[in-house]
Image (cartoon, helix red, strand yellow):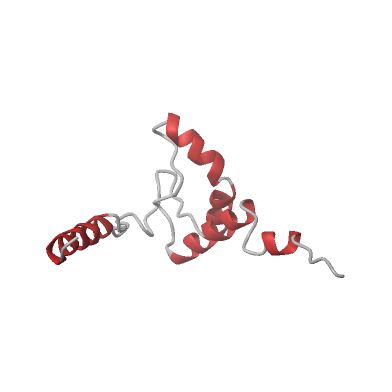
Length: 102
């Protein structure tokens, strides 16, 4: 490959990755139709049920994985905590591995 082809590929990959970035949430800190704003505990619950919600969202247009009417950082933190609990956390593999002693 010459330098021009490599440069074009690099620019294409850069534009592709830039297009995948998340945009701002316009509905953050605004109540939903019930008048609620999802916080940490709701984020924890949504993260915990995220594998099941994802499967259901493939077949239904009224079910979403992530609540857009949320409180921002605390909801996201709860969501990540709940998702890590259901997927085994970061220490799950290390705890199950045992070293053999000779």
